[in-house]
Length: 329
Image 1 (cartoon, rainbow, N blue to C red):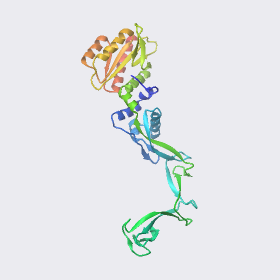
Image 2 (image 1 turned 135 degrees about the horizontal axis):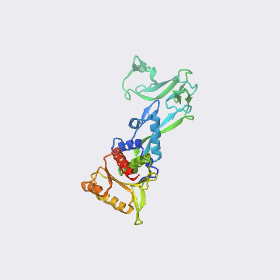
Image 3 (image 1 turned 180 degrees about the horizontal axis):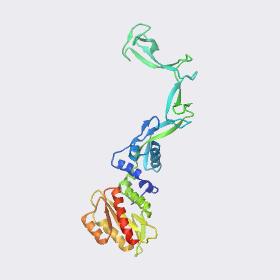
Image 4 (image 1 turned 90 degrees about the horizontal axis):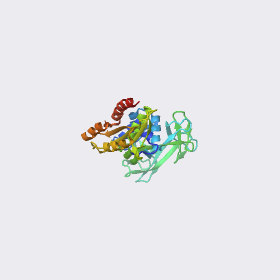
C-alpha cells in the first residue's frame, strides 16, 4: 500500500488517528475555531478528543497543516500584544487632538420636513425626539427623519471630529499600542486533504498503526518491504519487520474491504512465501475473510488476523507475535 513520504509517523500517531476517524465518519466536515478572550481561538472539539491544552492542540494542528495533511482556510487574523504576546486585547478609540479615550459618539440626524440638521442629543426631550426648530415630534426613521452620519466629541478637550484614532489595550500587561506595533496570528478552519482521506480509507492508517506498534516492540520495519525469493524474484510485502539477531523476518500484508474478503489475497501471500521460504507470514484482513480463506490459512500455516478496528488488530497481533517469535528465538 502506498504512503506519502514523511507521513507514516503522523499516521501512526494515536491523536492523529482519532482526528482522522472524526473526518472519515463525517463527525467533522470542517474544523472551526471558537474565540476565547484568554487563549484566543481554540479548537474545542480537538481539545476534548485528544485531551490536550489549547496551545498543544494548536501545535498539533499546525504540524498537520504544514505537512499538507490538513487543508487550511484563513478564518481570521487575531490581534496579539507586541509586548507579552497575550491575545486578551481590546480596541479603543482616541481623540485625534489630545489622545483621550473620553470621547462620546453622537448621531447626526436630519428632520426631513423642516430640514433641521443637528446632533441627536439636541432633538431628545423626555425620551422622545422633538425638533428644536419647528417643534414637531420625530416618530419614524426614514419617514420623519434620517440618520446622516456619526460625529464624535471629546469630553476632555471639547473638540469635535468625524474620525477617531484606533488603538489597542492589552488586558494582560496594560500596554497601549497602535496598528504599527501590533502583531497578528493567522487563524484557520481545517479540512482533511482529499488525497490523505483516500490514503487513510485505503489502509495507510492501519499500516502506520502496525508499524509504530512493531517499532515499540523493538522491530526495525520497512513499509513497503521487499524480500528476494529463491527464484531471484523480489517480492513486495506491506511490512517487513526484523528484530535483533533473529534471522526469520516477519512479513505482513493487509487487506481492507467493505465486506468479507475472498481467499485470493491469502493465496497471493502464500505464493510469495513459497518462494521466500524463511519468513513468518501474517495476513491482516479488515473486517474479515470467508470460510475458505480461514481453512487455507490454517493449512498453509499463515497467521490470520481478522479485526474490525486498529486496536483489535494490535491486540491480536501482539498475541500472535509473542507466540510465533518464541518458536523461532
